[in-house]
Length: 177
Image (cartoon, rainbow, N blue to C red):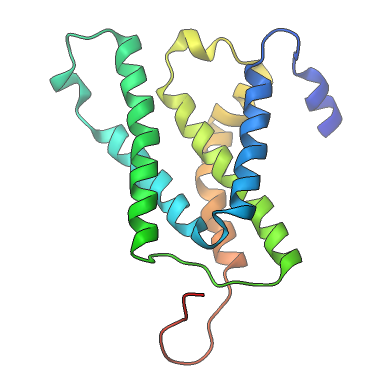
C-alpha cells in the first residue's frame, strides 16, 4: 500500500512533492533536537495562528489587492504568527513537556514531527491560490487536503497528546527541566 502510494507520485514532473517530504524531515529533526520540550507550544501556536488568519477580515482592508498578493500575505502572516506565538509561549514556559529517556524521545519526536508538519502543510494548502495548488501531485493533495485528510491532520495531534502525555503523580508544581 505504501509502496503503491509512493510510486504514484510523479517525482519528475515537479519538485513540490519532494519539498513536502523535505519539510516533513526537517520538522522531525527540529522536534528531536530543538523543539522536543516545546512541542505543545508549537502545536498550540499552529492552531491559534490558523484561527487568527482564518477569521481575520482581509476583505475589509485589502479589497483593492490581487488574490495572489492576499494569498502571500496570508501565508507570511500564518508563518509569522506561528513563530511569534511559539516564542511567546516558550518564553513563559507554557506547555513545557517533561523530559524522558532517549528512545522514547526519538519515537515521540517522530510522531510529533509528522503530525505538526502534516497539520502545518494541510492548513497552509488552504491559504494557497489555485494556480500554486495545481503544481502538486494528486496524491500529495489527497494526503494533505482532502476532507478526511484535513480532519485527521487537525485531530490526530490532539489525540496523540492525550495518549503520549505522561500523567503526573503527587501534588505540587512540575519542574521545568
